[in-house]
Length: 107
Image (cartoon, rainbow, N blue to C red; front, top):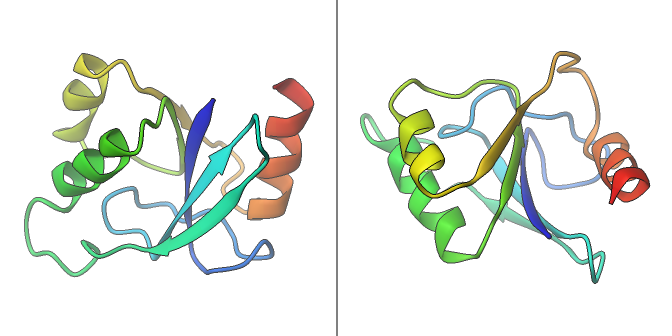
């Protein structure tokens, strides 16, 4: 399974970023290979359409699940139509490493 996590930084100690479309980094994670890639969000400075552009990026990479703190109202219907599951974290202070460990435990 391919998952994307929104991140405030480019390492495992960074916290989950609360903003999907305007997060600092996307963390692409493959549960089969356990491969991790940190990608700076090229859309974080967009005045409009950051969420939609981010959806296009992750959909092109075959992502099936998103872990984030919040999601814009325009983006949810797009993700639903693409059958991409969204996990909204209640404990937004979790690190990327903690999220990866949880994903590995349940994968």
